[in-house]
Image 1 (cartoon, one colour):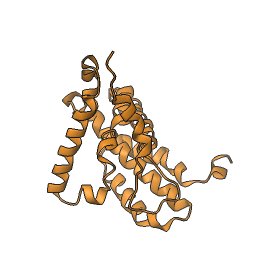
Image 2 (cartoon, rainbow, N blue to C red):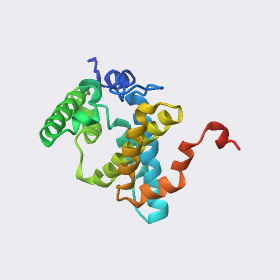
Image 3 (cartoon, helix red, strand yellow):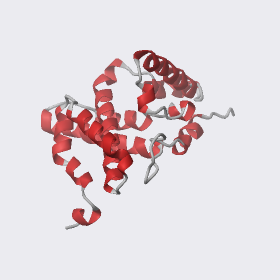
Image 4 (cartoon, one colour):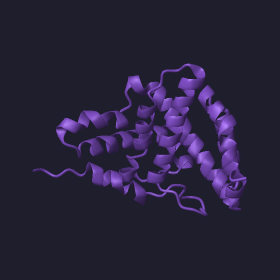
Length: 195
């Protein structure tokens, strides 16, 4: 029987640290980040369904989020200021991500490739869910900034303001609802949660 490397490579997500250009009080790897984004994507989809009459597949949103940064086991985590520096770099990086996704899918048996391709090659049918994943990704970055500044890490002060502005500019009612209803709790300490 032939051996395949896909899941062993996915397991390496825990080895890729995020926020490499900044001093961190607490390290965050892409496996942890992907879990957070999956939880948030699921929540945004449920909010859309229950509060705004949408018909999102919440479980699918969580699954897309779980794999959204998997290509970084090949590319590494490119810092956002570099990745989005200009359109040329952004375009080249998208090509690199696409090639990394193809390489990962190539590490699967033929009969499984179709199940995993949508995580790396965005399909039209998932377009609305990917918007939720992107929003959840930004919320996750905001949460990281909140956690770092709450521990006194001044390195994240400007990033916190920038992320708060980015979140305010997301035109999705699910995001506004989440931010009004659930986000304030992230600014609290454990003792404040248990009062």
